[in-house]
Image 1 (cartoon, rainbow, N blue to C red):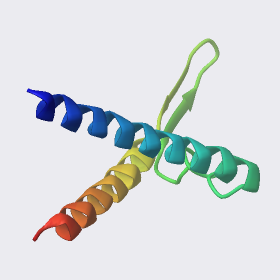
Image 2: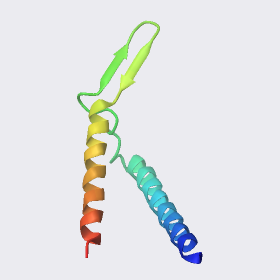
Image 3: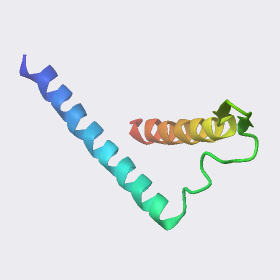
Image 4: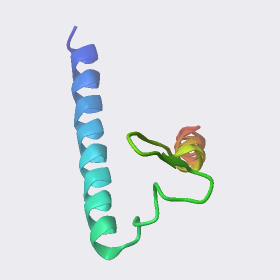
Length: 81
């Protein structure tokens, strides 16, 4: 009965460490200017009218999706026996 709780607790700790690492990278990246252009890539849709503005970072979403896919694929590949 304790094994599933142990596994869930381990998963929570690992998820917390990953979130802290991502947060630290975002903070350091914004201070160093590394992530400054993220969200303002060519191809992102921006419209400013007189009373309305619309912004959709479609290219940024694609780039982040590709990076996440590659990272998860690498993790999956390295965990295979």
